[in-house]
Image (cartoon, rainbow, N blue to C red; front, side, top):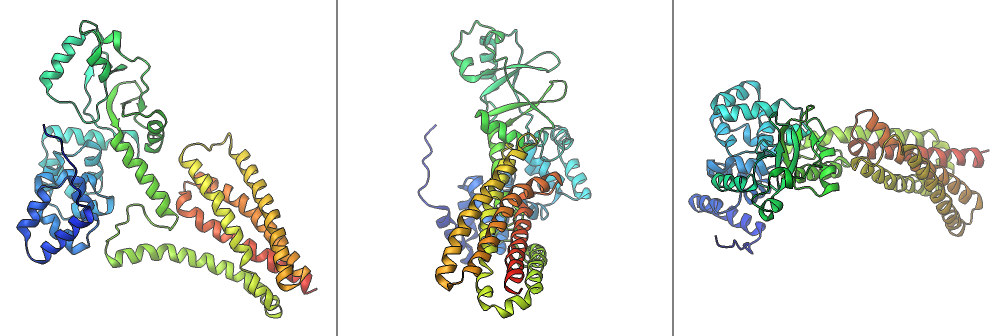
Length: 454
């Protein structure tokens, strides 16, 4: 088979060509271009196109490749396209889809459409899907595929090799064949490299890797991703509570989980879903962002109410109005550093009950030391700038208090939110900002009122 050479043409250039061709009405040309492209590239172009363009492109795509393309799309766009497909087309697309991706699609369908799709499927596909749907979402069961190749321990390697040649192909990302007993309980695994290089007269038992680590079907997908990352796995078997082999998880599915978790953390900081469509409808996008902006508005009003409590102090000392934003700003930056560190630790599974108290103490100490350092510096700056020792001392004291509290809040807020089953990446930033703004303003204006107004 000839080696495939990657085209130097960028996806952006292809998108421009497709857009120009569509604008000129060259639909046949666009269809031919799409047929020559990989499913992942088509999915990328669909996600990079405005709604009208992607609708036309979707109609021009060969239906035989629909399933492969849906596998590559983000959740929001995938749901939108599936809602426009009839049950027969969804069932046809299911034939080329992995079990985990198909299960996700069917979970998002209305009950009436879901039943029609199942009826349109073959018996084999129906059994495959019903098994996948029996496991909760975001677990190992929802990630796994059932395309496993199993061996018996007493079979000779020569027999196995002849069987594989007759079979003709192996499932994608197969680096190991699993050894099971008569009840399908996992006994170990045989690496493909060992299978090809060992004595053909040896038995499977002689070369099998008996210390194979299997994944419980109920394990969370985040924990699965951590195991793959820690052990550099290409694939891993999935078992039930009786050690019976149910399927396997491959690295391509784990990469999707890692990417989704990273996107979730990044988008969560802005209060947005990780599956948000960049080119989604205006009204839908506006509504989603308005919800989080509403929450943030109430938090801002809470901070503003603190300033209102000390309105008399601010009116009498104009310099205070100029300097009052420094304290909450420094506290916010310091707190966000701690917050990001703790959220990452939670995501990696590094933080638990055994070490959370030590971590809180560490961040509290760092907050105090940072507060001490920067309060001295800001005291000197205000003294030189305004020539006022009292005002410099007030802002220094307020900064020490706020940065100490910021270190404590940055460490405890994500832990508390996690315990309340609230995503720290989604709500942590807003809660921390509210805390540092309120404490910073209250400390600075409170000290100013206490010492300057007396």
